[in-house]
Length: 366
Image (cartoon, rainbow, N blue to C red; front, side, top):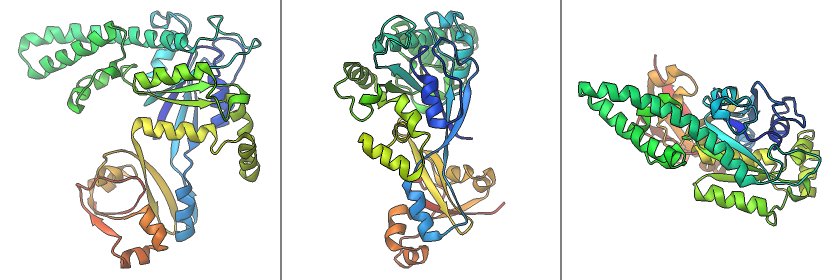
C-alpha cells in the first residue's frame, strides 16, 4: 500500500487545483468553500531517473516505479474541532494519512475569494494548526482519564503511558503540536493508536501565482511561510497550482520544453514528492531482472528482511540473505556480471540496513 499525504488547507487556497494537477484524477474544483466533500484519492508514480538507467542495463519486459498517494481532504474552517463546516469529516480523513501537505495561499487574486477575506498565510496556518491541536487535546485528555483509572493497579506500562500523555498534553495546552515533543520509539508506540493529528510531519506548499512559478524569492508571503516552517522543523515547497495544471496536460518533449521555458528544472510534483520523501525519511531500493526493473519504498533504517516484506511477507518470513549491489557500482560496472567480478556484489544477512539505491535480490525459503 502506498504511503500517503493528505492535502489540506483553508477553503479556496488551491488544494483541489493542485490535487488535479499532480494526479490528473479529476477532483472537482470550484470557487466556493467545501467543494471537496469526500476525500479524493490519487496515486502517482514517483519519478526516479535511476529506473531507466537500470533498465538500459538489464533490458526488462517492464519498468515499475514506486507510488505515492495524495488525498485531497475537505477544506477546514475555524471551529472544525467542534464540528463546524465539515470538520468532523476532515479530522477523520486526516488521521489516516502518513503526512500532511498543508497548502497555503501566497498569491493575490481579487477573483478568488478567501474564507477570511484577506491573504495572510501565517494566520491561515495557525487557524488549521489550532483546530488540529484542539482535536488532539480532546483525544489526549480522554485517554488520560482512562489511564489514570488504571494506575491504581500499579502497572508499569500505564505509568509510562501517563507520563508521555502528560508531556504531550502540556505541549498542546501551550498551543504546540505533539510533534514538538521529543519521544523515543518506545514512547511513540504507547500513543500510536491515538492517531494524533499534530504528531504527523507537515510539508507546507506555498501556492504562488503563475509569474512566480520559477522564482518566488521576492514574494513576502513565501518568505514568511519558509521562516515559519523552519522554526518548527518542517519543510516548505513553493509551487504554482495553475502552472502544474498546464504541466499535467503535457508529456515527454513538450513537457520538457515547457519546463525549460519557465526556467524550471523539475515540475512541482517532482519537488513535492522529493520533499515528502525527505520529510518522511524514505529510501528507494530496486529489484532488477529480465521480467521487470522495479522501485520499492522503505523507511530509512529498514533492515533487509523488513525491506523484503515490502515485496511479500513470505520473503521476510523465510529470509535467508540478500544479494546487494549499490546503484552507482552497478551503473559504473555496466552489468551485474561485471559488478560480481569486481567484488561489488555482496551477500548481506538479517542485520543489514538497506541503503538508498541498493539493487537487491532476496534469497528465501518458506
